[in-house]
Amino acid sequence: MTEAPTDAAKRELGCDEDILENQVSSDAQESVLKSEDILPIILLELKGALLEEPLGHTATDALNPTTEGTLSWKASLCSLLLVNRSFFQAGSNLLWNTMETLEPVFRLLPWYTKTRYNGLGNYQYNGSVDWERFNFYASRIQGFHLISSPEDDFPISSPWLLQLLTLHERPDPLFPILQSIIVIPEAFPRLQVLFLLVGPSLRSLEVFSCSEISDYAIIPSDWEAYASESEEAFTEEVLDNLIALLPRVSVSSPQLQSLTYRGPFSVDLFHHLSQLKSLVSMHLTMANSYGGLLAPSKCFAKLTSLQHLVLEAPLLDVEFPLPEVVAVELDTLEIAVGQHTSLRERIQ
Image 1: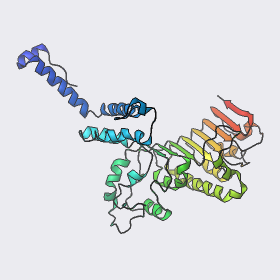
Image 2: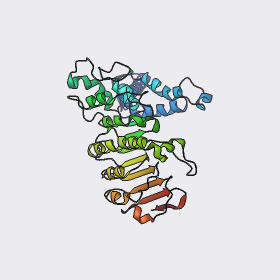
Image 3: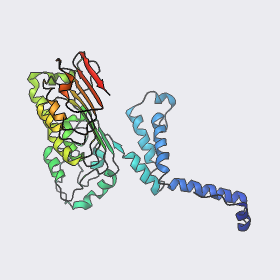
């Protein structure tokens, strides 16, 4: 930081005091505008202010937020990226930090020019060179919060996904600092794209195949398929999508610490969950009436790092001794089964 000159220095330089002070102030301002340490803090504060009251909106507008309004902070921040290189770097890090869609980053691939992703087509693939622009922005993404259906965001069929995963000189991982993935029910049908996302930096994974349940006496309508025996094929498909992914997570994400899952369960799913040896916290909500809740005891015993466990089974209406469910020492354990409030226990 530039220091103000002493009186002796001013006399020696023969400069006007006001001119010197103005110069010091100007140098300080310029220093701030180029500071890689200060700019991220300033831009983060700007984001917070814009989220509360976007530019061009009144206080009344802020009380009635819209999708357009929530995006306005990104539009405002984009206008600042051209100030200088430091603004561009800090602003880009903030803009790409957490993404709700996959489309923007995969659109950076030079062969992705159509509405749907249809592989390389007749594009002449050039290896790592074709990934440079993608890498520049993908290396800034720390979180994906996927909220859109496959048809609305990066529609890709299985053959092209397989091709993308096996392209020569494809960067691996695609997202080197990605730490968090959230998949809400609307986006669950696109679970296969997580094969592109998981990597060594992943710390938290949240997957929801159905809506949240707030009152155990009222079962959400989208749980009915899991509760019905006539919909077993649908339940199996949902389970297959997750079970197929978990071995890759186990190998590719050795530092995964937190897992949250809400959806149907099976013995096979519990087995694959037990392979995530690095887990410290796990929250599982069973959306079917799978009666094998006692089966997890041996599986959880393999999770030697596990400290916090929440098990919920709203559709299961049985009583059982708590110790038989979890054969592992935990700091926190919470179990909620059907209407049995007596089974809601917490150990701390």
